Amino acid sequence: MYKNIEKQTVLKLKDLVEYQAGQVVSKTLVQNAAVGVTLFAFDKGEEISTHTAGGDALVTVLDGVGRFTVGGDEFFLTAGESLVMPKGIPHAVFGEERFKMQLTVSF
Image 1 (tube, rainbow, N blue to C red):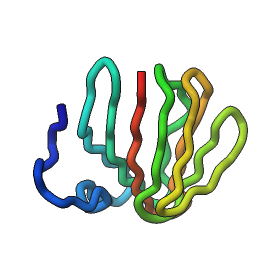
Image 2: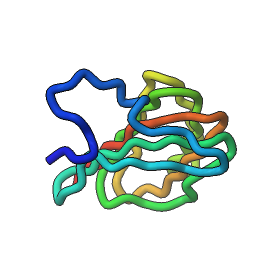
Image 3: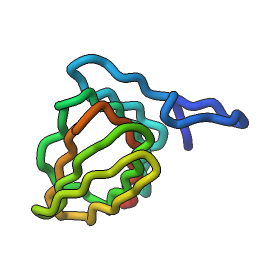
């Protein structure tokens, strides 16, 4: 079930999470045993350090440019681009500039 989001309303996902200086801001939209959907806003130079996930993680950049390191490979994504980070593969996320993304993890 969706939370923290209006239903039956046209939304721009990038407008649902705000940038904050020196921070990574997140807003959870769905979290259950099958799926997690979270919006993130990264200030330039902010990061989520290397970790693994318990499911496949699909990221879609909504604004700006993010650097994704997955299993040692680097990917630079811009608005409208997506990448799957496979379950169990170490990955990290870095704000090359301010950027926003949607993360969907399927368990």
